[in-house]
Image (cartoon, rainbow, N blue to C red; front, side):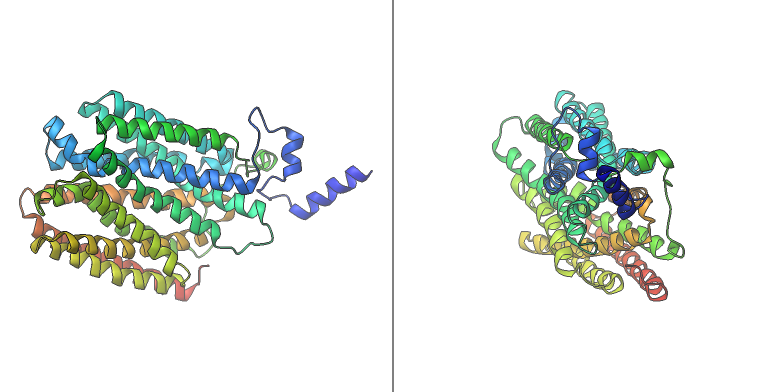
Length: 433
C-alpha cells in the first residue's frame, strides 16, 4: 500500500509530460551493462564530449598549409575541404538532429562520437584528397548529431539534478563554453602538434580519435533524460515553435548565419592570410589566431550574455563591425599584433551575436521540440560557416585579398545589423525569454 501510494504521488508531482527520469525509475528499469553516473557528473561528461568533438572540427585550421604543400592544391581547394564539413553537419542537423527528442539524448550523443572516431581514422589512414573530403563530411555529420542534442542534454541533466532552479542560466553558459571553447582549443592543439610533433597530420587525427573514445565511455555512463514511457505515448513534433515566435526565430537564423560566416572565413583562410599576406609561417601562430577568436567569442558571451536579446544583439553587431574593419585594415597594413587584436574583437562580436540568436531560438521552441528547433538554428550557422568562405576564395581569383575582405566586411556588417534590428523589433512586440 505504501509503495502504491508513493508511486501515485510521484506521478502526480511529475506530470505526464516530465522529461527527466527520476533516479528511482532508472534503477527500477535497470541501467544497462554500464554503471550510471549521477546526473551532476553526467552533466560534465556531456560538456567534455561536446567540447572535444567541436575541437576536432576546427583542428585542421593551422594544418591547411601542410595539406597545401603535401597535395599541391590551392586556397580554393583548401576552402572547399574545410567547408564540406557543412554538408555533413547540415545533413546531421536537418535529418538527424531532432532524433534525441524522440529516442533519447544519450542514444544520439553516443553515435555522434562513434562517427567522429571513424572520421578521425579516415583522415589519418587516407591521406589523399578524397579521404580528406570523406573525413570532413563524416566530421560534419558527427557535429550535426552532437550540437543541438548536447545543448538540450545539458539543460535536461542540470534541471534533473537541480529541479529547484528552473531559471538557472548555467546550462546555457556551459553549452556555450563547450561549443566555442572546443572550437577554440582545436586549432591551438593542432598548432602545437604541427610545430613540434613528427607526422603532424596523422598525429592530430589519432590524438582526437583517442580523446573521443574516452568521451564515448563517459557518455555511456551518463543517465538518459528523455522518458521512454512518455515517448511511447506519442511522438514529439520534429519542429514546433511557440505561437507568435516565427519573427524572433527568423531573426535568430540570420544571426547564426552572419556570426558563423566570420568564424568560418577566418578558420578556413586565416592561416593562409597569415602566411601569404603577413609572411608568418609558424604553425603555432596559425593555431593561436583562431584560438583567440573563438576564446573571445566565449568570453564575450559570458560578459554580455545576461543582457536582454535586443540589447545583446545590438551590442554584438557594433563590436562585430569594429572587428571586421580591423581585420581588413590588418591586411592593408600587415602587422601580427593588429591582426590578432582584430580577430579577438571580431570573434567577441560574433559570439555575442550567436548567443543572442540562441536565446531567441530556444525561447521560440516548444519544450518537446527543443533539440529539433536548435538543429535548424545550428544548420543556419553552419551554412554561414562554409558558404561565404568558399565565395571569398573564388572572388580572390579576380580581386585582391584586401579588396575582397573590405567587401565582405561591409556585407557581413550590414547583414548582422539588419538581423539584430529585425530581432529587436519582434522582441519589442513579443518578448522572448
